[in-house]
Length: 125
Image 1 (cartoon, helix red, strand yellow):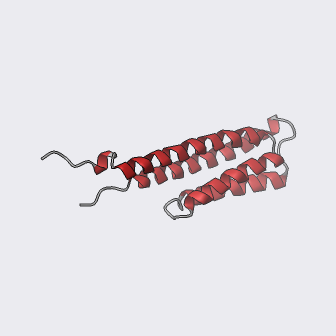
Image 2 (cartoon, helix red, strand yellow; image 1 turned 90 degrees about the vertical axis):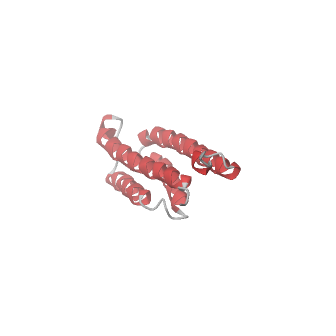
Image 3 (cartoon, one colour; image 1 turned 120 degrees about the vertical axis):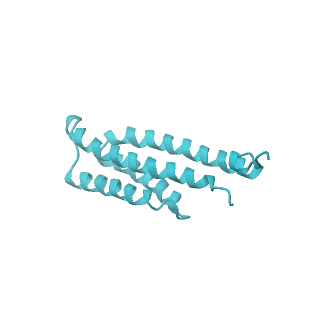
């Protein structure tokens, strides 16, 4: 029997975070008119496209380049802050969330290297 892949769980967290972020981005569009000028049709279209890309990217996290795509989408959210300044704060918050997730991934990888994960322990007979 092969041991489960701990990185599969980490990739699942990445995927779930992308879906949640897409929901937050789309919900932010509903409240934008209450803050300043709101968004232009171009801004709304680009922000909606980024949210759709996040949902698609959530399904691609098992690919070797999936994490890179997720991080590129974080940059896209920050750039959308130039179109809709209210999204800048949300972009910064999610960049911090992704920094925490990358720290978690690094910690799991280091524990895997040292053989410290519970799935790597030999059970007592």
